[in-house]
Image (tube, rainbow over all chains, first blue to last red; front, top):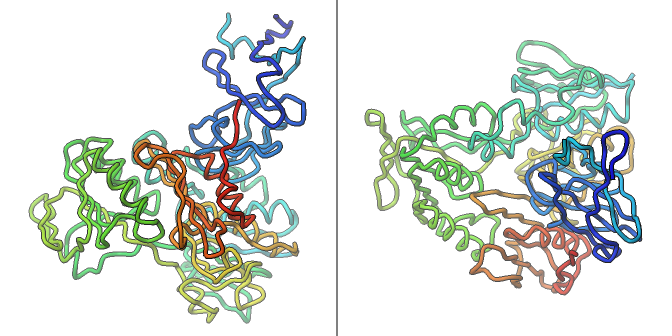
Length: 115
Length: 395
């Protein structure tokens, strides 16, 4: 579904795939995206830690804080903010919408590789 | 206008300066650093920098490039030679005087050196600074013989980097096992096997007795053997840089003694980072060599120095990346009276959970099991039993 600003919604999962308090890992082209269900609301961020290469979904989700499995850096998954060393740079977040039980994430065309 | 002076441009001093700028925007903040560059991240020195996958510019600490905009005056290449507690000043080698209302000592530590009578004229590398890493990196050339003295984390990371570059690597360790300081024997044995699998030669219970230079070679005499090497690196521990504090007659006990609020024996002088001996996990004071502890303590010190009611109670934790191995140590695994294992130690991913006398988790080591490291941190904090270490679900 194309948006007029060159962005596109991508369906990544269904609500059943990500129960409350859990997360799931997805790839769109080269981008790794993590989905989190925080008290019934879905959030999406880059799934790769900004400090070193690790998938955050291999880490520990504690309420709305994801802790990286490699060195213990932490991010707020709702805002992408780095909240604990050694994470310094914030995580990229993505707009999310739920359409008929499908979780969709907004990506720009340069991100998803489409022309 | 309040004057904050920070001595030491490592992660503790850097974090403190950033926190001062945030909490006291009208204060003057002077960050005095002996090194000539902006504060940088040290963990990559023995990893990404040696592997050549990161450059010096890429490890500058976040926020250091914007010191001027944040009212932080960074003074690189500035060696502080004395503290005058009466006058509340510090003096540099160049004779510059900085007055302070509150002073933070974050002077860090330095590598312990082999005695000169042991090394003779032989060149020995150490690894602590960016300069050290820049000097060592180009020496790690394929097929060269690299001798690492000391089987601690630094030595093993250097050994892994050298082996990755197809050097011929030997590690000698004076103790009967690797990682003898801080790690339980099970972890030592596992790590030793991994290094051997990667072609690293390991000699334990092997101390260095002497060295000599023979042309381009270095001949090292060790317990029971003589080893010829092209490059020698020593990683045999760290010593706190307490000289300034000692001369100023601040209380020293191994490190610079500070309380949980980072205060030294002088109410105007605080300490943070590896130079300090501080209360750990509500127990006795000790020095902690950990990037994470230093970073957090720097922030807490600046908060305390600007009047916040805070204490530093970070659980010691460290990580090491060698080959494809990620090791995370939480708390005090070596002080456990009993240990439990999660996963299979014959595999590449397992966790050791260390229990105190009351059965509570006091630490542990997660090997390629990052989620367990997160669980260990929480278990130690909550003084939970080992049943806390349940797998956390992922969809």
